[in-house]
Length: 246
Image (cartoon, rainbow, N blue to C red; front, side, top):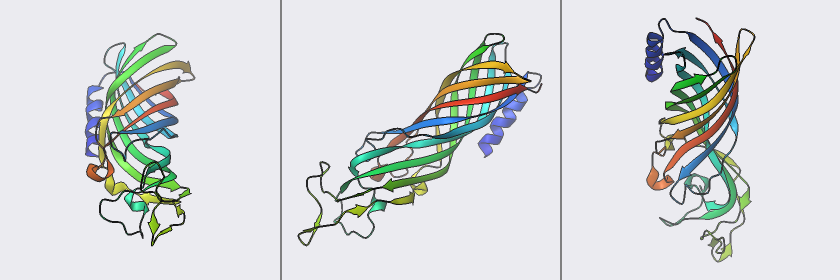
């Protein structure tokens, strides 16, 4: 929160005497996770809501500085044969270091309060086009894993060697569960983002469409030796409205 206050105060100071716009937006985010270990591979994108508020003030006729506060969902999902998270196999005694695999669906949901500060270059008169780019810092709001489905447990990734007990194959294991993983995820993330958009006058302000790529630059795991190394990333598309207040 201290970072947010500092950014807001700096922008208010720099915007003294400039044209000032405020706006709000909402849309969809398509996040994914990228990693380089067995626990991190195989993620595909998911979909979630995205939105926020912002202020925009001009430095020159075409160049604007735009701080924002956004709700930014991250994460990803994977289906099929995959390593079993340690938190999903409570009640089963395993030798140290043994890995198990199963065929199920796992969705990692990470929600952040995101604070970007963007440079925005605008061209055009009535219909205006823009590109924007800049850094962001994100604060973790929620982190959980939703799993679903049932499967035999296997000793190999190919699913050819089922886990047995006293010589008998164990029954299918249910993965229908939601697990809080907030302690496994760093509280602060950071990265860069950039996008393009179009604005068109409507009423006292302008409606706009914004497309953006959001790239995390920080390994988000607190225990990468167990959970692998992951970085966030997403594509976001939003529609919004901005109005000049000065």
